[in-house]
Image (cartoon, rainbow, N blue to C red; front, side, top):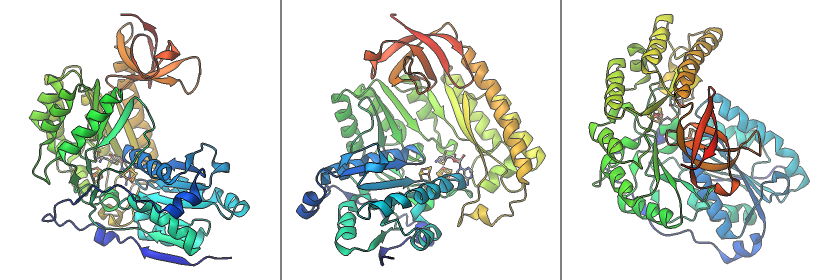
Length: 481
Ligand code: SAH
Ligand code: SF4
Ligand code: F3S
């Protein structure tokens, strides 16, 4: 029998695109309040979360887990035995959405077997009108939809599902407040994600993120620094500072700039500091200097270029030219000779000619990236690029994609080879995915190493001598010095 839908609010991408620069972020410090009824009803029930997309979503899932555990749920990694299943979704490309619809479809049989099971879909996908209406009309098994701006309302929403016996939709499309003091269950006990800002104001023409995540808004530096001090006291070895454009940190409030914040974090003395993503447009000289100055700021710089052709960069709304990007890379390499530079590239953007694509290839030949994420352009409903004629044949896009990945792989292997016979520092993550007798972890400049070592060292930084370089990994063995 079909249940009614109770819509508390639904997304509106036009509203999501508004940016009122006079409105400062509102900081909320009250922790979530949980009704006694809900605590009693859910005590000991099991939760399962599947996360798609970027580190921002991984961090949100840690907060969702924290809230669920505060209600009384316990974690299960067996989806079949869960009492609540949440899919924290991504819509940055069509493939990501397809995977989620496949997963929602496969959960139908679980819901039929157990009508008390709660299935919720949250994250970026549900910030889009057309996705919400598809889920509500075609996927009756979904009980709850909530967005990226109202994770803190989860206890109230679960309670609504239980007491109203209706399907609940509550997706806000405002510019977004900042919720501090939410509980969270971190996935790791030695490396942590730390949001320093939310949202994005860049509106690159192909990208859905500014619509799904709201206005660019910075956390107060005091809150960030306190969080990192606590992590250090708990024994964490590594923090990764998160934002869609970390170098825009502090531009919306009276507080530190990103280089100043980074310096304060370095002084806390946590062993490894990473940050992602930095937009080339506001990557300042001060930032390069701070990275160069502190040993505990890792010299891995993710610097998305997207394209190497000026006309395509203009159509993408990226706000820099090929020449400006190359000048920035040169500056970074001069001041930080050991810098590892990685990137994101989109091929097959509307109007990408063979010449334009060759410009992207030649830029890669000049920069010689340590590695790159490469994507075929995927039109996103509601973005300006989706209105441009998608006039590059899929066949051509695939050929270009293959050519590009070959060039990236060539320089990646070349760079990885320079590590052979050298000793590197690796933060040990655990047994490798492919072989449980081999450990894996990342070097300071973010290279994955599989090595023979001592399992008791998980969570510690060890020395590994590299014996062999492959295209995407290094192999080695633990050594004393
Ligand atoms: N804020 C980050 C990127 C977040 S999205 C930045 O600006 O660097 C991660 C990557 O997905 C982007 O860098 C881009 O390469 C890719 N991407 C985003 N939208 C896309 C689309 N519509 N089609 C294909 N790739 C896309
Ligand atoms: Fe998307 Fe551009 Fe913002 Fe990155 S900077 S999230 S690519 S709009
Ligand atoms: Fe995806 Fe949203 Fe992150 S669209 S990449 S999960 S910000």
